[in-house]
Length: 105
Length: 490
Image (tube, rainbow over the protein chains, first blue to last red):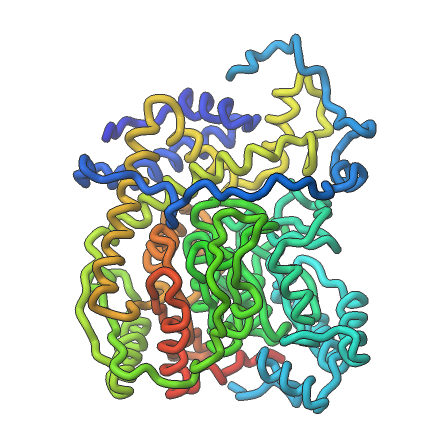
């Protein structure tokens, strides 16, 4: 596994992908921390896993099917009760389209 | 060290029986426990929130015969990442400081139907990410045996509430050791059930393929009684396996003839405190005296457990925690924002603490283009190897024995500056979650010194092997009296 140094710029990019507006101070603290953690976990690169099936889950998951029966959903007031801003029946957010930032990250 | 806290029972089954036989009323017991919380919790900080009025009302209904069930009147604490339709569910995070769940977790409904008295919600590492309950917006939960030390984590609040007799049973969640490790450090019993044994509906997700809800108690029997209530399939959680109902208390007290205890040579490693090693060796001798056969087994990929875990868990976390966007619920920034991306990014940066941010960053990095195969995919393959290790080992033994943690409870602040050192404290517990098997921690001794600290013994069992696991643990418990010790609290 590639054991490259993590740069401040990479950490800044990952923060952007993570949708975390981190301060310069946080980015500076995180850079060596991420580096030491990633260096440690790179240990799994020592193993030959060429013939091993990945295991995403502890139990053999199959599609769990049920009859399509209409059940009562949460009432609207409960759905909106924790919203920071709402105008029933909507969640209110600032302008979505036309911002400066590339929304694709 | 006293053997008993007061005239009131503090074990789950002790409380259940005393209420049933009317030796004590549910209201009297609840008042007693609430008084202890009021007295002790300002220092220990095991609880994030307490609803005394609600608890007393439930207790009154029990005394009037209007609230019934197998655990009627028993005061219970819930980890504050389990959704309740009453009070708040904060995950010890600024993000969810005011979050009021619109529904109950499945296990809350089940406990409600069992007639328990809910005391409140307990402290945790933010979003269950941590091993010391220091990553909490409410500050650390202190260890009842020595208040300068951590309670473990992430279910440190539930473990400390249990150890300080501020409840008669508690519920936690375990993603990499978060029930067993604090149980070990606080001298109580903690059970991580098999993945799929207990519904996760209403458990705030951290790493969905690893998370599992489980009980704390003073005894193995108390945990078995709680598992009886918690276990079972749930149409709302498709990963919860619909096993036929089992009674984990049945035959619990009967020793297993010819029990085979596996000792993994890979668990015998440097860095284990000599007092921990001595206590665990004595437990092995105890089992041998009880007629158990001690078997050498090998778990060759153990040394890769922490590395695989600290890839898989942050990857799943980075995806699960994407839901906290300041739109539907949770913290929203008050700062001016230009657009919705900035709203997301500022709300998340303000709402999450340092460890949660760190794990989201690790997960995002490991899943990002160019790194996915080397980190996430490879970790899933290592996961298979770890699972295969256990399956091979359980062919020659019934349970695998180890320390729960390499050291007793460490000092508050000792490891907060070094995230990796904190991660390494999970060395004996993470592989159980990775493989999806079951495990238990029970007290097996104390350190010497002015403030003796509990030492935890871990037993691991195969998937859905809880009955054997609990019986094996009970054999040791019946032969020892560590579980009768109580911390010397004022």
